Image (cartoon, rainbow, N blue to C red; front, side, top):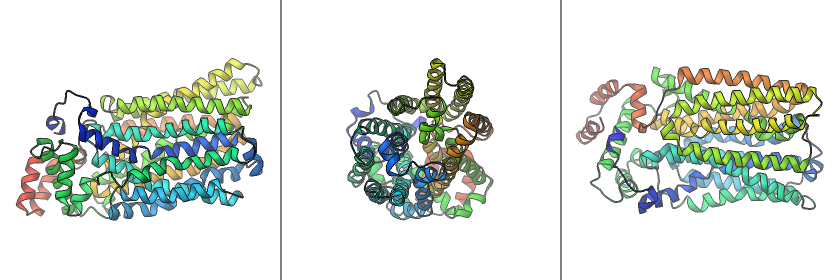
Amino acid sequence: MLQDILPKREKMWWSYPRLRTLNLLLLCAIVTDITNGYDGSMLNGIQSVPQWQKFFGHPAGSRLGTISNGVRYGQIGALFFCAPIIQRFGRKRPIAIGSSILLLGVILQTAAQNYAMFVVGRILIGFGNTIQTTACPILISELAYPSQRAQIVGFMNSTGSLGSLMAAWITYGTAFLAGSWAWRLPSALQALSSLFQLSLCFFVPESPRWLVHNNRREEAFQIIAKYHAEGDENSELLKFEMAEIDYALELEWANSTSSWKAWIKTSANRYRLFIIVTVGFIIQWTGNALISYYLHLVLNSIGITNSKTQLIINGCININGVIWGNLFSVLANKIGRRPLFLFGMTGMFCAFLSLTVLTGVNTGQKFANPSIGHATIAMILLFGAFYKMPGVIVPSYTAEIAPYDLRAKAFVITGFGDALANLFSGYTNPIALAAIGWKYYIVWCCVLISNFLIIYFFYPETKSLSLEEVAQMFDGSAAQRKVVDEEVTDDKTKQNVDTAL
C-alpha cells in the first residue's frame, strides 16, 4: 500500500527544495476557487450598495435570480466542453483557456451599460471559471505529493472563502465611492486571481497520468522523480507510483472505460456514478446558497436592514470561512472523509434548525429583541464553520472515487449537479423568501437530514489510499488481476503490475 511505501520524512515539506517548488507552482490551481467565492460575496455586497440598486432598477424576484444565476448558465454551457478539452489538451492548458474566457467576462461585467450586458459578462465568468474548476482539482490530485493530495485540494476549495473575504471587504470599502465605481471597481478586481493563474500555469508540470496515457511515459517518470523523489531515480516511491499508473491505465484500456457508457457498464461504476451525481447536489443543497447569494434578504428577514451593518456581517462571515476552511483542509487526512461529511451535515442541521427557530421568534416579536438577532448571526457563523467540513473534501473525494479515464467526466457530472442545484436555488430562494419568509428555512432542515442519510449509507472512506488503491476498493483487486492477465501481453507492464499489487 501507499502508506507502506511513503518515505518517513522528519522535516516539513518546505525543507525539500523540489517539493517546495511543486507546491508553489500548484498555486495556479489552488487559487481557482477564489473566483467562485469572490463572485457570491461580491454580489451579496453590491446588493447592499444603493448605486448598484439604482443603476439596475432595484432587481428582485426572477430578475435578481437571473443576475445571480448568470454564472450558472455559463457553468452549464461549459460543462459540455470540459471533458473533451481536458482529455485532449491535458490538465494545465485548460486553466489558461478558462482564465482567458473569464477575464473577458470580467471586462463585460465591469463595463456593463445595462442589465443584459451585466448578465452576459456573468455568463462568461461562469463559463471560464467552470473550465478552471474542472481541470484544477484533477491536476492537483494527479500531480501533488501523494500524502498531500487531499490537503492541497482542500486548500483549493477553501480559497473560495478567501475570495469571499476579499470581496466582502472590497465592496465595503468601495460602497462609499461616488457613482457607479462603487460597484464597478469590485467587479474589475475579480480578474486578479485569473491573471495570477494565467501567468503561472505555463510553468506548472503536466499530470504524470495524462502523460503516460498519451505515450509520454519518460516525461512522467522525470516529473515524479524530480518533484516526489527529490531527483532520486531509484526511489521506491517513484517505482511504486509509476507501476500503479501503468497498471491502472492498462486495466482501463483492457476494460475500454473511456466512453460515457462506461458509467453504467459495471456495478462498481454505477456505484461510483451514484456518489458523483449526489455529491454535486449535496454540497450545494444545504441551505448555503441562501447565505452565499442572498445574505441581504436573510438579514432583512431578521430585521438587520442597515447597509453598512450588512456589509460588515458579510465580511465577518467570510473571515469565519477562511479560518475553518484552512483548518479542516489541514486535518483532512487525520479525520477522514466520512467523518468530515457526517459531522458537517449534523452541525449544519443543528445550526439551521436554531436559525429557523430564532428567526421565527424574532419575527413574532417584530424584531424588538436585539439579542435574538445577535444569536441568529451566531448561528449563521456556526453553520459556515460546519459547511467547511464537507466543503473542503468534495473535489478530492470526487477525484478519488473516479478511475483515471472517467475522472474528467466525473467532474463534469459533479459540475452539472452543482450547477442545477444552484440554478434551482437561485430562482427559488428569493421567491420563497418573499412568499413565506423564515418558514422556508424548514425545507433546508429536511434536506440536510436527507443528505446525512445518503452519506451514511453510501459514501465509503478513502482516507490514506492512493488513487489506484481506491479503484481497487471499488472494483476488487482479484477481478482486476484477472482482466489484466487476460488482456495485457506486454512483459514490462506485467512486471510493473506485479510491483503495484
